[in-house]
Image 1: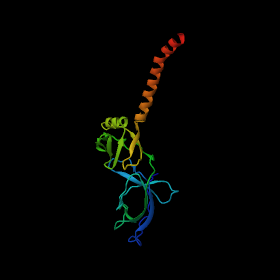
Image 2: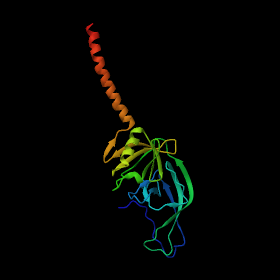
Image 3: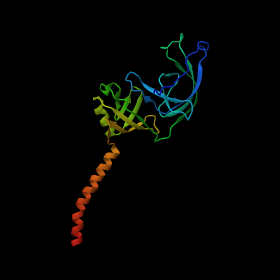
Image 4: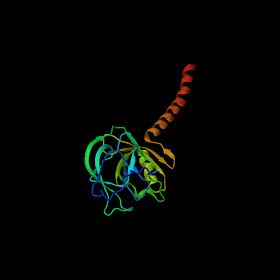
Length: 214
């Protein structure tokens, strides 16, 4: 069953009158799974509703990742209305716009499960910085950035976990490639610390025995 937003069918008696709705808009978009499409806004009409994909863009809406919105939109249908006609969403008013708290996380799941390499949708844009689908700019630590450079040339199923911060650009903090988690910089630091402690214990153990005997 599709999670796309459902809208009322056109009525010939009221086609000229737009249907006005209030939408809550989530702080991140979701990839719909089609390479030819961009990300979808996630909207709901009540805080108690589930988030649903809005397949069509909202004309006049300047969306920014990392912000939650409450907006008023108008839905109109093309003339003459038919089954192939797509609805048109137009921004009427932004009622509120609030940045989410720092450390808020989100995931883009399996957006890269494709039959071709990822070079067309995941592009480097600087040192440890990337652009995804020509829309989402993000940064990553050295370990994740290195893996993202590697998977760009392969047909891989990738899930990235992000964290919002005080900046406009989210940071990649977790990466899963073909079902396997890639260690982050902090994970490598833990491993290195464990190796260091184990080595130190081996070095100090004979010295302790020598001191005890003396």
